[in-house]
Image 1 (cartoon, helix red, strand yellow):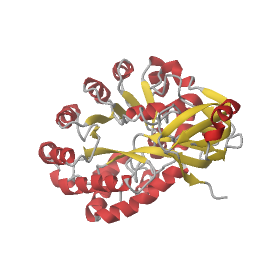
Image 2 (cartoon, one colour):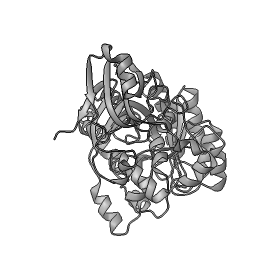
Image 3 (cartoon, helix red, strand yellow):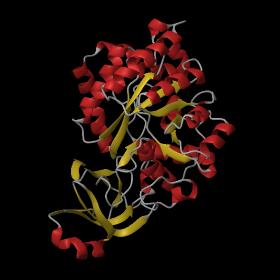
Image 4 (cartoon, one colour):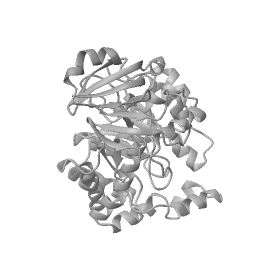
Length: 419
Protein backbone atom coordinates (compact mmCIF):
# COMPACT_ATOMS: atom_id res chain seq x y z
CA UNK A 1 0.00 0.00 0.00
CA UNK A 2 0.96 3.63 -0.53
CA UNK A 3 0.62 6.69 1.64
CA UNK A 4 -0.09 10.33 0.81
CA UNK A 5 0.72 12.05 4.09
CA UNK A 6 1.00 15.46 5.75
CA UNK A 7 -1.95 16.86 3.82
CA UNK A 8 -2.68 20.34 5.12
CA UNK A 9 -6.25 20.42 3.83
CA UNK A 10 -8.01 17.41 2.32
CA UNK A 11 -11.13 18.12 0.27
CA UNK A 12 -12.92 14.75 0.15
CA UNK A 13 -16.35 15.38 -1.46
CA UNK A 14 -17.42 12.35 0.62
CA UNK A 15 -20.29 13.79 2.66
CA UNK A 16 -22.93 11.59 0.99
CA UNK A 17 -20.82 8.49 0.58
CA UNK A 18 -19.35 9.78 -2.65
CA UNK A 19 -22.73 10.59 -4.20
CA UNK A 20 -24.03 13.65 -6.05
CA UNK A 21 -24.52 16.88 -4.06
CA UNK A 22 -27.32 19.43 -4.49
CA UNK A 23 -28.25 22.84 -3.16
CA UNK A 24 -26.66 23.65 0.25
CA UNK A 25 -24.84 20.30 0.25
CA UNK A 26 -22.61 21.62 -2.52
CA UNK A 27 -21.02 23.85 0.11
CA UNK A 28 -20.46 21.03 2.61
CA UNK A 29 -18.06 18.72 0.77
CA UNK A 30 -16.09 17.29 3.68
CA UNK A 31 -12.79 18.90 4.71
CA UNK A 32 -10.14 17.29 6.92
CA UNK A 33 -7.07 19.14 8.16
CA UNK A 34 -3.75 17.40 8.84
CA UNK A 35 -4.84 14.35 6.87
CA UNK A 36 -3.44 11.29 5.10
CA UNK A 37 -4.69 8.78 2.50
CA UNK A 38 -3.79 5.10 2.18
CA UNK A 39 -4.30 3.63 -1.29
CA UNK A 40 -3.11 1.10 -3.83
CA UNK A 41 -3.64 0.58 -7.55
CA UNK A 42 -7.03 -1.01 -6.85
CA UNK A 43 -8.35 2.04 -5.02
CA UNK A 44 -8.58 4.06 -1.84
CA UNK A 45 -8.11 2.01 1.32
CA UNK A 46 -8.65 4.66 3.99
CA UNK A 47 -8.30 8.36 4.74
CA UNK A 48 -8.44 10.50 7.85
CA UNK A 49 -6.31 12.18 10.48
CA UNK A 50 -2.63 11.86 9.60
CA UNK A 51 -1.49 10.38 12.93
CA UNK A 52 -4.42 7.98 13.13
CA UNK A 53 -3.76 6.67 9.61
CA UNK A 54 -0.05 6.24 10.33
CA UNK A 55 -0.67 4.34 13.54
CA UNK A 56 -3.11 1.96 11.85
CA UNK A 57 -1.38 1.36 8.49
CA UNK A 58 2.24 2.41 9.01
CA UNK A 59 3.67 -1.13 8.91
CA UNK A 60 1.94 -1.90 5.60
CA UNK A 61 3.20 1.13 3.65
CA UNK A 62 5.73 0.40 0.88
CA UNK A 63 6.10 3.96 -0.42
CA UNK A 64 4.86 7.42 0.49
CA UNK A 65 4.47 10.96 -0.82
CA UNK A 66 4.78 13.93 1.50
CA UNK A 67 2.21 16.60 0.60
CA UNK A 68 4.12 19.09 2.74
CA UNK A 69 1.02 20.67 4.25
CA UNK A 70 -0.57 21.40 0.87
CA UNK A 71 -4.12 21.10 -0.41
CA UNK A 72 -5.15 17.69 -1.78
CA UNK A 73 -8.37 17.06 -3.72
CA UNK A 74 -9.92 14.36 -5.88
CA UNK A 75 -8.74 14.31 -9.47
CA UNK A 76 -10.78 16.76 -11.53
CA UNK A 77 -13.47 15.54 -13.90
CA UNK A 78 -14.14 17.41 -17.16
CA UNK A 79 -17.55 16.19 -18.37
CA UNK A 80 -17.86 18.08 -21.68
CA UNK A 81 -15.05 18.38 -24.23
CA UNK A 82 -14.40 18.16 -27.95
CA UNK A 83 -10.76 17.31 -27.36
CA UNK A 84 -10.09 15.29 -30.54
CA UNK A 85 -9.59 17.51 -33.58
CA UNK A 86 -7.05 18.66 -36.16
CA UNK A 87 -5.86 22.25 -36.45
CA UNK A 88 -6.89 25.43 -34.66
CA UNK A 89 -9.20 28.31 -35.52
CA UNK A 90 -7.46 31.42 -34.24
CA UNK A 91 -8.46 33.37 -37.39
CA UNK A 92 -12.08 33.08 -36.27
CA UNK A 93 -11.02 34.39 -32.86
CA UNK A 94 -9.82 37.57 -34.57
CA UNK A 95 -12.97 37.75 -36.72
CA UNK A 96 -15.10 37.77 -33.56
CA UNK A 97 -12.94 40.50 -32.05
CA UNK A 98 -13.65 42.55 -35.18
CA UNK A 99 -17.38 42.19 -34.63
CA UNK A 100 -18.59 39.01 -36.32
CA UNK A 101 -20.81 36.68 -34.32
CA UNK A 102 -20.30 32.96 -33.84
CA UNK A 103 -23.38 32.23 -35.97
CA UNK A 104 -22.24 34.58 -38.77
CA UNK A 105 -18.89 32.81 -38.95
CA UNK A 106 -20.66 29.45 -39.02
CA UNK A 107 -22.88 30.56 -41.92
CA UNK A 108 -19.72 31.41 -43.89
CA UNK A 109 -18.42 27.85 -43.52
CA UNK A 110 -16.41 28.50 -40.40
CA UNK A 111 -16.93 27.11 -36.94
CA UNK A 112 -17.75 23.41 -36.74
CA UNK A 113 -17.65 23.01 -40.54
CA UNK A 114 -14.10 24.37 -40.57
CA UNK A 115 -12.99 21.65 -38.17
CA UNK A 116 -15.04 19.07 -40.09
CA UNK A 117 -13.07 19.61 -43.28
CA UNK A 118 -9.79 19.12 -41.42
CA UNK A 119 -10.94 15.97 -39.63
CA UNK A 120 -12.28 14.43 -42.83
CA UNK A 121 -8.91 14.97 -44.53
CA UNK A 122 -6.87 13.52 -41.64
CA UNK A 123 -5.90 9.90 -41.15
CA UNK A 124 -6.71 8.08 -37.93
CA UNK A 125 -3.07 8.28 -36.83
CA UNK A 126 -2.90 11.99 -37.64
CA UNK A 127 -6.01 12.57 -35.58
CA UNK A 128 -4.59 10.65 -32.63
CA UNK A 129 -1.21 12.38 -32.84
CA UNK A 130 -2.68 15.87 -33.09
CA UNK A 131 -4.92 15.25 -30.08
CA UNK A 132 -2.53 13.50 -27.70
CA UNK A 133 -0.88 16.73 -26.54
CA UNK A 134 -4.22 18.01 -25.29
CA UNK A 135 -4.49 15.21 -22.74
CA UNK A 136 -1.04 16.01 -21.37
CA UNK A 137 -2.20 19.60 -20.90
CA UNK A 138 -5.29 18.34 -19.10
CA UNK A 139 -3.09 16.42 -16.66
CA UNK A 140 -1.14 19.58 -15.93
CA UNK A 141 -4.46 21.15 -14.91
CA UNK A 142 -5.41 18.25 -12.63
CA UNK A 143 -7.93 16.56 -14.94
CA UNK A 144 -7.91 12.78 -14.45
CA UNK A 145 -11.26 11.89 -16.06
CA UNK A 146 -12.61 13.44 -19.26
CA UNK A 147 -15.58 13.07 -21.56
CA UNK A 148 -14.71 13.42 -25.27
CA UNK A 149 -17.18 13.87 -28.13
CA UNK A 150 -17.07 13.12 -31.82
CA UNK A 151 -18.92 15.60 -34.03
CA UNK A 152 -16.30 16.99 -36.41
CA UNK A 153 -16.74 14.17 -38.93
CA UNK A 154 -20.42 14.55 -39.86
CA UNK A 155 -20.41 11.53 -42.14
CA UNK A 156 -20.31 7.83 -41.35
CA UNK A 157 -16.64 7.25 -42.14
CA UNK A 158 -15.29 10.30 -40.31
CA UNK A 159 -17.52 9.98 -37.24
CA UNK A 160 -16.35 6.40 -36.82
CA UNK A 161 -12.78 7.57 -37.36
CA UNK A 162 -13.14 10.11 -34.55
CA UNK A 163 -14.60 7.56 -32.15
CA UNK A 164 -11.88 5.06 -33.03
CA UNK A 165 -9.29 7.75 -32.36
CA UNK A 166 -10.88 8.39 -28.96
CA UNK A 167 -10.78 4.66 -28.23
CA UNK A 168 -7.12 4.47 -29.24
CA UNK A 169 -6.27 7.47 -27.08
CA UNK A 170 -7.95 5.75 -24.12
CA UNK A 171 -5.17 3.17 -24.16
CA UNK A 172 -2.42 5.78 -24.58
CA UNK A 173 -3.17 8.52 -22.04
CA UNK A 174 -3.41 8.52 -18.26
CA UNK A 175 -7.01 9.71 -18.00
CA UNK A 176 -10.21 7.73 -18.00
CA UNK A 177 -11.93 8.79 -21.23
CA UNK A 178 -15.72 8.62 -21.61
CA UNK A 179 -16.66 8.64 -25.35
CA UNK A 180 -19.74 10.41 -26.70
CA UNK A 181 -21.19 10.18 -30.21
CA UNK A 182 -22.16 13.65 -31.50
CA UNK A 183 -22.97 13.06 -35.15
CA UNK A 184 -25.77 15.62 -34.72
CA UNK A 185 -23.33 18.46 -34.04
CA UNK A 186 -24.08 20.42 -37.22
CA UNK A 187 -25.70 19.90 -40.61
CA UNK A 188 -22.86 19.09 -43.04
CA UNK A 189 -22.39 21.21 -46.15
CA UNK A 190 -23.49 18.44 -48.53
CA UNK A 191 -26.90 18.27 -46.83
CA UNK A 192 -27.58 22.00 -47.03
CA UNK A 193 -29.86 23.83 -47.48
CA UNK A 194 -32.72 21.33 -47.68
CA UNK A 195 -31.29 17.97 -46.68
CA UNK A 196 -31.46 18.06 -42.87
CA UNK A 197 -34.04 15.27 -42.71
CA UNK A 198 -31.87 13.09 -44.93
CA UNK A 199 -28.90 13.70 -42.63
CA UNK A 200 -30.96 12.84 -39.55
CA UNK A 201 -32.01 9.61 -41.25
CA UNK A 202 -28.35 8.86 -41.99
CA UNK A 203 -27.54 9.28 -38.31
CA UNK A 204 -30.39 6.98 -37.27
CA UNK A 205 -30.07 4.33 -39.99
CA UNK A 206 -26.30 4.11 -40.46
CA UNK A 207 -24.25 5.93 -37.84
CA UNK A 208 -25.97 4.84 -34.64
CA UNK A 209 -26.09 1.13 -35.56
CA UNK A 210 -22.34 1.13 -36.33
CA UNK A 211 -21.44 3.09 -33.21
CA UNK A 212 -23.46 0.70 -31.06
CA UNK A 213 -22.24 -2.44 -32.81
CA UNK A 214 -18.58 -1.46 -32.33
CA UNK A 215 -19.23 -0.18 -28.78
CA UNK A 216 -17.51 3.09 -29.61
CA UNK A 217 -19.57 5.40 -27.38
CA UNK A 218 -21.22 5.45 -23.97
CA UNK A 219 -23.40 8.49 -24.72
CA UNK A 220 -25.20 10.09 -27.64
CA UNK A 221 -25.40 13.88 -27.71
CA UNK A 222 -27.27 16.33 -29.97
CA UNK A 223 -26.73 20.06 -30.57
CA UNK A 224 -30.31 21.17 -29.94
CA UNK A 225 -30.34 24.79 -31.05
CA UNK A 226 -32.16 27.16 -33.42
CA UNK A 227 -30.86 26.71 -36.95
CA UNK A 228 -29.37 23.28 -36.23
CA UNK A 229 -31.43 20.45 -34.67
CA UNK A 230 -34.73 21.49 -33.12
CA UNK A 231 -36.53 19.71 -30.29
CA UNK A 232 -38.34 17.38 -32.67
CA UNK A 233 -35.13 16.47 -34.50
CA UNK A 234 -33.31 15.93 -31.24
CA UNK A 235 -36.05 13.71 -29.85
CA UNK A 236 -35.91 11.46 -32.94
CA UNK A 237 -32.14 11.04 -32.74
CA UNK A 238 -32.00 10.55 -28.98
CA UNK A 239 -34.84 8.03 -28.96
CA UNK A 240 -33.00 6.06 -31.65
CA UNK A 241 -29.80 6.22 -29.59
CA UNK A 242 -31.65 5.06 -26.48
CA UNK A 243 -32.94 2.11 -28.48
CA UNK A 244 -29.33 1.18 -29.24
CA UNK A 245 -28.42 1.17 -25.54
CA UNK A 246 -26.66 4.53 -25.39
CA UNK A 247 -27.11 6.96 -22.51
CA UNK A 248 -28.19 10.47 -23.45
CA UNK A 249 -26.76 13.99 -23.31
CA UNK A 250 -27.90 17.21 -24.91
CA UNK A 251 -26.42 20.56 -25.92
CA UNK A 252 -29.40 22.63 -24.76
CA UNK A 253 -30.54 26.25 -24.70
CA UNK A 254 -27.08 27.68 -25.39
CA UNK A 255 -27.96 30.66 -27.57
CA UNK A 256 -31.77 30.62 -27.65
CA UNK A 257 -34.35 29.05 -25.37
CA UNK A 258 -35.65 26.11 -27.41
CA UNK A 259 -36.97 23.76 -24.73
CA UNK A 260 -33.83 21.64 -24.82
CA UNK A 261 -33.60 21.34 -21.04
CA UNK A 262 -37.20 20.16 -20.82
CA UNK A 263 -36.55 17.61 -23.58
CA UNK A 264 -33.50 16.29 -21.77
CA UNK A 265 -35.47 15.77 -18.57
CA UNK A 266 -38.36 14.16 -20.46
CA UNK A 267 -35.94 11.63 -22.01
CA UNK A 268 -34.09 11.06 -18.72
CA UNK A 269 -30.86 12.38 -20.22
CA UNK A 270 -27.93 12.20 -17.84
CA UNK A 271 -27.08 15.84 -18.55
CA UNK A 272 -28.13 18.93 -20.43
CA UNK A 273 -25.20 21.21 -21.19
CA UNK A 274 -24.62 24.97 -21.78
CA UNK A 275 -28.03 26.45 -20.67
CA UNK A 276 -27.07 30.08 -21.24
CA UNK A 277 -30.62 30.77 -22.45
CA UNK A 278 -32.59 28.29 -20.33
CA UNK A 279 -36.15 29.38 -19.53
CA UNK A 280 -37.72 29.66 -16.08
CA UNK A 281 -39.78 26.57 -16.88
CA UNK A 282 -36.61 24.76 -17.92
CA UNK A 283 -34.95 25.65 -14.61
CA UNK A 284 -37.95 24.41 -12.64
CA UNK A 285 -38.18 21.13 -14.56
CA UNK A 286 -34.45 20.53 -14.32
CA UNK A 287 -34.33 21.28 -10.58
CA UNK A 288 -36.98 18.63 -9.93
CA UNK A 289 -35.13 15.98 -11.96
CA UNK A 290 -32.05 13.77 -11.78
CA UNK A 291 -30.67 15.28 -15.00
CA UNK A 292 -27.47 17.24 -14.40
CA UNK A 293 -26.95 20.82 -15.59
CA UNK A 294 -23.42 21.00 -17.03
CA UNK A 295 -22.44 24.66 -17.28
CA UNK A 296 -19.69 25.94 -19.59
CA UNK A 297 -18.78 29.49 -18.54
CA UNK A 298 -15.47 29.39 -20.41
CA UNK A 299 -17.41 29.35 -23.68
CA UNK A 300 -19.44 32.44 -22.82
CA UNK A 301 -16.22 34.13 -21.66
CA UNK A 302 -14.25 33.33 -24.82
CA UNK A 303 -17.11 34.27 -27.16
CA UNK A 304 -17.52 37.55 -25.33
CA UNK A 305 -21.13 36.89 -24.42
CA UNK A 306 -22.79 39.06 -21.80
CA UNK A 307 -25.12 36.31 -20.59
CA UNK A 308 -24.00 33.30 -18.57
CA UNK A 309 -26.01 30.30 -17.47
CA UNK A 310 -28.04 31.03 -14.30
CA UNK A 311 -25.92 28.92 -11.96
CA UNK A 312 -27.12 30.66 -8.80
CA UNK A 313 -30.79 30.04 -9.63
CA UNK A 314 -30.14 26.43 -10.65
CA UNK A 315 -28.26 25.66 -7.44
CA UNK A 316 -30.68 27.46 -5.14
CA UNK A 317 -33.63 25.66 -6.74
CA UNK A 318 -31.98 22.26 -6.20
CA UNK A 319 -30.62 21.26 -9.61
CA UNK A 320 -27.55 19.04 -9.91
CA UNK A 321 -24.86 21.38 -11.27
CA UNK A 322 -21.50 20.55 -12.83
CA UNK A 323 -18.84 22.57 -14.66
CA UNK A 324 -16.80 21.71 -17.76
CA UNK A 325 -14.30 23.38 -20.07
CA UNK A 326 -16.10 22.66 -23.38
CA UNK A 327 -12.53 22.39 -24.68
CA UNK A 328 -12.65 22.73 -28.47
CA UNK A 329 -10.72 24.55 -31.21
CA UNK A 330 -13.30 27.27 -31.81
CA UNK A 331 -15.39 28.54 -28.92
CA UNK A 332 -13.42 27.38 -25.86
CA UNK A 333 -9.79 26.47 -26.59
CA UNK A 334 -8.74 25.77 -23.01
CA UNK A 335 -8.01 22.68 -20.91
CA UNK A 336 -7.76 24.84 -17.78
CA UNK A 337 -10.64 23.63 -15.61
CA UNK A 338 -9.42 25.62 -12.56
CA UNK A 339 -9.73 28.77 -14.71
CA UNK A 340 -13.30 27.74 -15.55
CA UNK A 341 -13.90 27.51 -11.80
CA UNK A 342 -12.68 31.10 -11.45
CA UNK A 343 -15.04 32.29 -14.18
CA UNK A 344 -17.91 30.40 -12.54
CA UNK A 345 -17.18 32.19 -9.26
CA UNK A 346 -16.79 35.69 -10.68
CA UNK A 347 -19.39 35.67 -13.44
CA UNK A 348 -22.00 33.17 -12.21
CA UNK A 349 -21.58 33.81 -8.47
CA UNK A 350 -20.86 30.23 -7.53
CA UNK A 351 -18.94 29.93 -4.28
CA UNK A 352 -15.52 28.22 -4.37
CA UNK A 353 -16.91 25.11 -2.65
CA UNK A 354 -19.80 24.91 -5.12
CA UNK A 355 -17.29 25.15 -7.95
CA UNK A 356 -15.23 22.32 -6.41
CA UNK A 357 -18.32 20.13 -6.13
CA UNK A 358 -19.13 20.93 -9.76
CA UNK A 359 -15.75 19.70 -11.07
CA UNK A 360 -15.53 16.58 -8.93
CA UNK A 361 -18.46 14.47 -7.72
CA UNK A 362 -21.22 16.22 -9.71
CA UNK A 363 -19.12 16.20 -12.87
CA UNK A 364 -18.49 12.48 -12.34
CA UNK A 365 -22.24 11.92 -11.97
CA UNK A 366 -22.92 13.73 -15.25
CA UNK A 367 -20.90 11.10 -17.15
CA UNK A 368 -22.02 8.09 -15.09
CA UNK A 369 -18.63 7.76 -13.38
CA UNK A 370 -19.62 8.65 -9.81
CA UNK A 371 -19.14 5.08 -8.58
CA UNK A 372 -15.45 5.21 -9.54
CA UNK A 373 -14.22 8.82 -9.38
CA UNK A 374 -15.12 12.30 -8.18
CA UNK A 375 -14.56 11.90 -4.45
CA UNK A 376 -12.07 10.52 -1.96
CA UNK A 377 -14.19 7.58 -0.85
CA UNK A 378 -13.01 4.18 0.27
CA UNK A 379 -13.14 1.78 -2.67
CA UNK A 380 -13.07 4.43 -5.39
CA UNK A 381 -10.09 4.89 -7.69
CA UNK A 382 -7.03 6.54 -6.17
CA UNK A 383 -7.23 9.74 -8.24
CA UNK A 384 -5.74 12.73 -6.42
CA UNK A 385 -4.23 16.14 -7.07
CA UNK A 386 -1.63 17.73 -4.80
CA UNK A 387 -1.78 21.51 -5.27
CA UNK A 388 0.69 24.30 -4.67
CA UNK A 389 -1.89 25.90 -2.42
CA UNK A 390 -2.82 26.03 1.25
CA UNK A 391 -6.59 25.75 0.88
CA UNK A 392 -9.40 25.17 -1.61
CA UNK A 393 -10.19 28.88 -2.02
CA UNK A 394 -6.78 29.62 -3.52
CA UNK A 395 -7.39 27.60 -6.69
CA UNK A 396 -10.17 29.78 -8.17
CA UNK A 397 -8.65 32.83 -6.45
CA UNK A 398 -5.33 32.64 -8.34
CA UNK A 399 -7.15 32.67 -11.68
CA UNK A 400 -5.32 31.23 -14.65
CA UNK A 401 -2.32 30.17 -12.58
CA UNK A 402 -0.80 26.68 -12.85
CA UNK A 403 -0.97 25.37 -9.29
CA UNK A 404 -0.86 21.60 -9.81
CA UNK A 405 2.17 19.92 -8.17
CA UNK A 406 1.40 16.19 -8.46
CA UNK A 407 -1.32 14.17 -10.20
CA UNK A 408 -2.01 10.59 -9.09
CA UNK A 409 -4.21 8.38 -11.27
CA UNK A 410 -5.24 4.89 -10.17
CA UNK A 411 -2.54 4.97 -7.52
CA UNK A 412 0.31 6.00 -9.82
CA UNK A 413 2.01 9.37 -10.20
CA UNK A 414 1.22 10.38 -13.78
CA UNK A 415 2.25 14.05 -13.71
CA UNK A 416 4.64 16.04 -11.57
CA UNK A 417 5.67 19.66 -11.79
CA UNK A 418 9.24 20.06 -13.06
CA UNK A 419 10.98 22.69 -10.97
